[in-house]
Image (cartoon, rainbow, N blue to C red; front, side, top):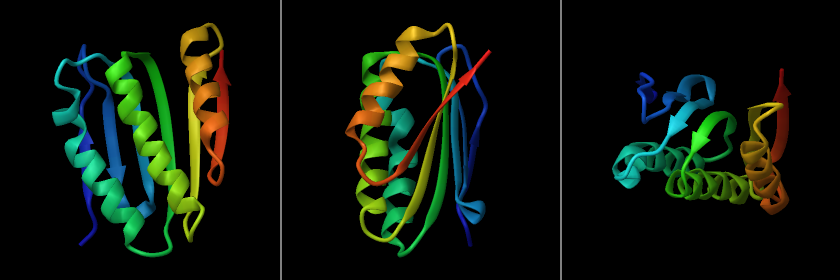
Length: 127
């Protein structure tokens, strides 16, 4: 049985979709929770298990509008895990989707992109 998780967006938390069957994950919206570790726990666990399950394909669409430093660290850690797996036997694409006027999120994505060595990191700038 494949894993599927969907969380609706709220004022402080992003929309989350994990669709293991299709090798797809999306996080979109705002993220500024105080207990960010709890929010990301099952996401983190799934990413680790999925990446360890052998050769995998994964597309991760990350479309953040606001992200605090704790959430930035959590998403960075997820992408680092993905990058390490891509260096072995995984094909991973990260699409960093951001509005052209959102310089803070653009800079965050650029910083992430510089750190990644193996996965495909696409900056997707929208109007």
